[in-house]
Length: 233
Image (tube, rainbow, N blue to C red):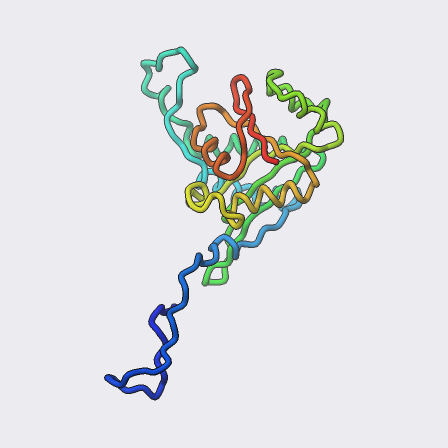
């Protein structure tokens, strides 16, 4: 453990003045704990082997809460209708979505792994995505509410959809603007691996926590109908 106490010569005795005392080191921002986490892509086979871990990561890192009613409609009188899906249901839905996206050409999933003092390697975060073209069925989810230039960027493969970024809460709420923020490292790596001009993602309007996190990581929100379209350049 590092001490901030000034150095004392080994020959000094208690009560003896120390000459030439060095100035204490200037305070500076320490290295991010996330900087030590290794980012690496997984093959489809490796993803299949680690589906259980990825499902647990999703449950651990995504906020859960009570369901919100559709706009303009009252809450149901049935108390069970107000409850959020169980962790198991949310994890299963994520894994189904991931399995579907894995079939897309150019799909890539990155994981962040840290080594514990025991020597064990643990999964701490992941992000995945895939490129889209101008005629991709993915555009149908946007209900036609698109900036005019986005489909043009997609024509040469300039758009990369980021499906999910799964990180611990501290990454969502601390040092979001730092380049070494783990979420920023993941999204930057995905885009640079695919030389994409623009990253895009869709978020449910009710998921305010995720929208706020993405905005803090450099995304900007564009209008869409039932969902929010966010863009990262």
